[in-house]
Each structure stands twice: as C-alpha cells, then as structure tokens.
Amino acid sequence: VPELPDVEGFRRSFEHHATGRTVRAVRSVDAILLRGTSAQAIGRALHGRTFQRPGRHGKVLLCPAHGPVLALHFGMTGSLEWDGQPHAHDRLVLELDRGVVAFRNMRRMGGIWLARDAGEVGRITGRLGPDWLDVSRRELDDVLDRRAALKAVLMDQTAAAGLGNLTADESLWRARIDPRRTARSLGRDERSALYRGIRRVLRDSLPLGRVPPRPTWLTGVRDDRAGRCPRCDERLRRATVGGRTTVYCPKEQR
DNA sequence: GCTCATGTTCCCCT
DNA sequence: CAGGGGAACATGAG
Image (cartoon, rainbow, N blue to C red; front, side, top):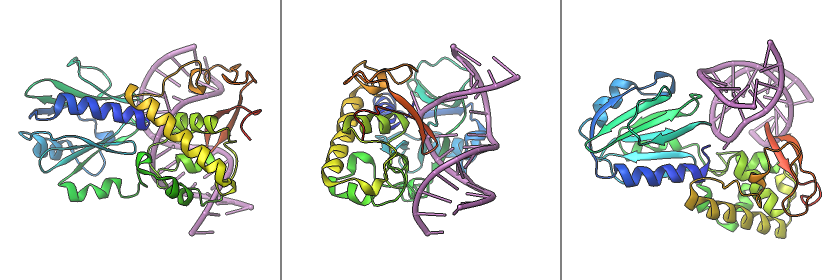
C-alpha cells in the first residue's frame, strides 16, 4: 500500500523501534529485490552498526547507520513488520540488539539498496524529483509544465516524488479536476486548487500512515464498481490514465 | 481459467 | 525529444 503517507508511517515506526539499535544479524535476504548489492555486502556493512534516524524521499525509506545507508522501496505490497515472527514473505530481516525488523513484501516488487555513505545515496534517489511535501506552490507550476495527462504527471516520480495511484486520484477529486486533462492546460486557480488538494490529502493521511478509506473520501468508495461520489452522489467513472486504473467523478471533475 | 492489484521500467510507436 | 500503450516483473485474491 506504499505511497508517501504509508512510507512515512514506516519511517516513523523504524525511527521508533530501530534508532539507536545495533544490528546483530542480517538474514532472509531476497536476491531478487537486491539492487546493485548482495546479501554478503549488506551483512558486512550493517553488522555491528547502529541505526540513526531514518529519512524518506518520495516512496524510498532511507536508514543510515553511521556510514552505510540502507534504502528500501516497498513496491505495491511491501511493509515493515516488528512482530519477530518469521513469515514466508520476509525479504530482509534485521535482528537488532532489541527487537527484529522484517521487510515483508509479497509481490517482490520494489527494491533493497545499500549506499556506502550518505554521499552515495544520490545514486539511489538521484532520479527522483523533490518530495511532494517539499514542493511549493510555485514549484508546482514547473511540475505541470508538460503536455502529458495530468494524472500521469502527478505520478511521475522524476517530476516530484511520493504520489501514487490513490493519492493522485484523491487529490484530483478534491480539486475537482479531470485526471485526463493535459497538465499544462490548468489555469491558475485550478493549479491552486490542485495544490491545496494534494497538501490536504497528504496532511490528513500522514498521521495515519495511509490514505484513510473513509466513506467521505474517494478512497473509501473507489473499490466499489458501482461507487458514487461522496460529495454529489454521481456514479463514479473508471478509466485508464497513465497506465493505471483511475476513478473520478464525471460531474464534478472537469 | 480469468481479471485485477496502492509500483517501476523498458520497448515500440506516433 | 515527448508522450501513450503495452508488457514484464512476481504473487496473490476473488
């Protein structure tokens, strides 16, 4: 479920459970998820190291350990678990001097990176645009300076990082803008509405670590094929935009 | 068996 | 080069 709010939730849990904790063992490393590193390299780099406060850039979680930095991308089904119980979908398990953290990921999309130091983190996040929480209203104009479909631009991580299918649809629904519009076609007021929509969705989702499936939100009704707009009760429509299923209100989103 | 899934990347067209 | 469409990746749920 990992979009910006979810990864921020993982970041907080990692901060709470792992900051100041020392790695005692690394196991259950899934080679298919490794990106430019190896199980041996991760073991060598992290064993005996103590984690510092984790960071996040878009959907990437960054876990520095006084030198090496472990980076995780959760794909569509990744999560962090602290139950200490072995699970078939564990793709990386770190035993700490107090507790165990498991990177669990059923579908094995996403990735595991290891940077040798903070300076090398750019190799991992270098292609990402600014984190959406750091995008100013003014910078939004730069992000939208494209001919592509608006929703495709919002989900393009190289333009700005962190929005996914859910947060993009939710933000566009809040702003009452048609996801299929060309990014460049938005007027000033529409851009401001979109900016407020994105901020609002992220701000409200952040403390929960997820986009809340409230019935008053699009997210709460989007999985219902016969779902209706929580605001105007119009029958919601489904389309494919930017290669992904898109739910919107044809009456309000213009 | 079939369809779809909250992500990313690559390839082929236009 | 920019953008769209589709497939691939890997695994499950309905």
